[in-house]
Image 1 (cartoon, chains in turn cyan, brown):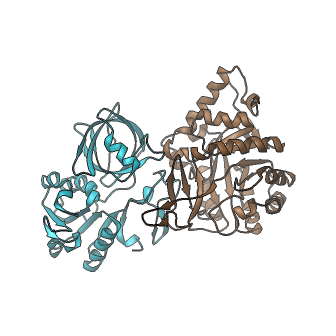
Image 2 (tube, helix red, strand yellow):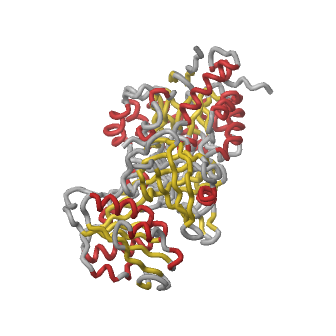
Image 3 (tube, rainbow over the protein chains, first blue to last red):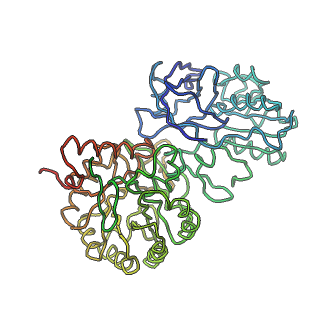
Length: 256
Length: 303
């Protein structure tokens, strides 16, 4: 998949919670390249030197729109969320490997559970759509601190059932995603993205249940291309770049 | 037609624009964005005698107009380079320069001897300035005796163009430059990263796993230009300038200050096409200023 540098225009930014916004972007001249769920993009933002890596939340090929769910995590993402509609943003894409959505284990009806924590819910929407297209049975599980901080629930509900956990019990099951009752059901494949402690807990649970599990990591990056070797994660084959050999890893490859 | 050719020792570059070691992988990472054949040269990732895993994560911290890194020379070792990477890149129509690192003089010599056997590699850059390894690296580059010792030993086994990459973390960089020149270096490249540190105040911990790391990016450029200017007046061998170059005008600053060629590092991370833009700028600059060859502008600073 050839990586490209494309100028986009922001067509809308809709805040979902006080700190997270869904940004819609349209390429100025080009059409969107093919993007695999779980891949990410790097945006050039004038307030900071390095590009900011953001996971692809959804892609609307019909209308040529890229959706990114962005959490205000500092100077760069704050500026991005405050850019007015019509602003031009240069984006490098598509980057990374993405989740596996077909192949030998994907017989029709394969039972997949897509687990997102906080802004880590972002890649699950597009992943769910693709898996459903490929004939999988999709269930979302999303967790947040409270009901007010849940993300993408309505959008996900249009695709498949959504199970919810909140730390304070204000919606869904009380506790973390691993405390959800949904784990009592049998699963063939689990996908997970969220804060590191959450992914480690999900990975441990999947190991115990002997369910294959893929996680998407978000180590701090500089180049996004596998050149600078800054974003490395320890794996069974040594330190590897999350940007180029990930961000998605089979938990069997990690040293967790 | 403007002539952008420059010479570094016996090494002929089609233009003065190279990429800096550790910022450009082995070239292929950038092949979707630029024509590698247009580069004057590219310096591949620091290569050591044996495989190195590098330092623990986190290895990077962004700072105002710059970044700290503490990668720690992660690479698969010189034999892997020769057997697996060299065959893939040797036919690129550009000068490939191998950056050589070691923990001891014997390590440097062993790597240089192996690289010397490769037909398509006409130069090495000896890294005596890496701030992120416990042994060797910068330890050799911060004393005239250490720098001389490594240069002398490599000169005895490496007949092609020998570039020594200098550390800015010294009191007087011209002393080190003169020391390696007198031991037979064909060129010096400068600057490697400046030793720096960043703190996560909420966690009250250093951001980098190694506590300190190397600062690069636009923030270091004025320091680098100053050092290139000083060194180019102190030695007769050509100087390769690097440190924060992010556009054509930045490159021109180094050339006017005395650099015969330049390297682009951190800017590759935020603008993967930057090297092509710089080459175009240099050709245009020569035209605008009515010079036929970029060589007329090397050290042409009017003071």
